[in-house]
Image (cartoon, rainbow, N blue to C red; front, side):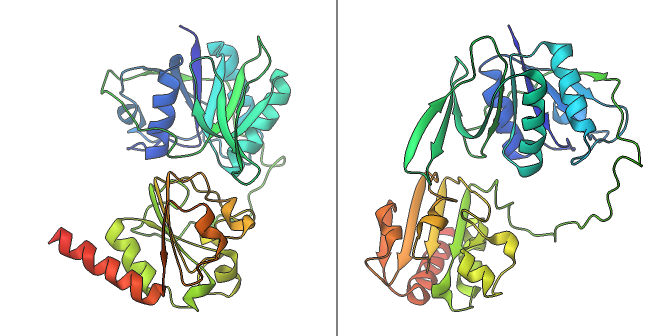
Length: 313
């Protein structure tokens, strides 16, 4: 069976849901080999899964934007003769895979939401207006990034993978200097880009995200926002969903007080189920919503929270 290389920026003591999904997708089309620039001592235990054969690392920690990431990936492809390279859909990863594609003289397909047995990638284009299928030229390796929540993880515990250290080292200090790293603020809520449930608010909140925070906590959801809300300073810009923000593809997306202009829809239209709350019955968001509530969100959302709490008690 041909090898499929799965790239993770880092591997910790536990795999994230997005990492588990990638391994599930890779296992369906080939022999899974994992390559990463950063590991912990527990990484091999996290990857002790049926279907995962080898863990490739470099000589030292190799983090984006270090150009050695591309050297690590290219060396891993040569070592495994992989016919596909899969990774999460992040800015750093897309940048690295684009340069890898140039070196391997092949194409890069981004924003995938599905992978077939013949290595065709399904993706949503033109702000979610169309679903397309893409593949690279015959005889060339597939290089692709996939959005979280593209599949249900189905992994079985197995033996620990072999660890192979490739002869790749971080770039010299004179070639690259990271001036500052700022860790994200710790939160009990899931990561916005990987969350299976997202609650998002917009201009209709008039600065009060309190009701949506309660709803997000009840649902175990991530909290997002439209550009209007982040530009107004009501919530951090990292929460912005849309064409100029992050793209999410959760199982459930709940929109409250967001009109649903095309720029916002571009960042969430691939959600499996969309629920919209807006007092304007002509709001564009209702055109793509699976369920819509025409009403004042400050009346509707508290009722939802109350009902959820009743069902939990």
